[in-house]
Image (cartoon, rainbow, N blue to C red):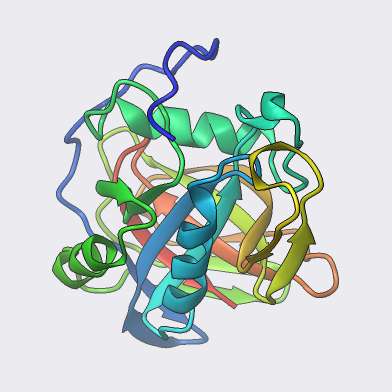
Length: 236
């Protein structure tokens, strides 16, 4: 599927090229580089199954945080994606202007909030991961219901703190209508919730966070506002 333009959402104003940060992580007191790979996909899109398969393979890499976001704008084709929410669609839309796109499309992969590629092109995804800029890790620790963010360099107006819960198991979804009728589609690292915890100003801080539902994992993204680069990430 190609780009879907003018889908009726109002985008937040974009601050493009805000910072030259890459993504990094510290978990359980031990820092290691981490690249964030976000797939925007839909069970109603016939081009998406290969991208889902690519994300499943990429998720096996210890230095990658792979996240699958279901979007809603292909639900009108006859099958409502069971994982999609308007919030995930809005997240994708917010990326489009800084990435130089004229509208969202599926399947789209965004790496570290800095660059994107069509999600069924595994070679191009591998290249983006290999060339992703990484910084010295910003200390991030998820410990039960507590998130500790260390001191570091933040954007002038702060950075967004995103709390994500996701399922790291492979889930098979039979599709009975729409473009993928009759197919069972495997998914992995499906995002189940996304919430903004506020702004980080560069100072060390500890925040209370909600527990993930049983069977789900928690991740945190520190990200420049308005679809800017991801500065740091951690998962439990």
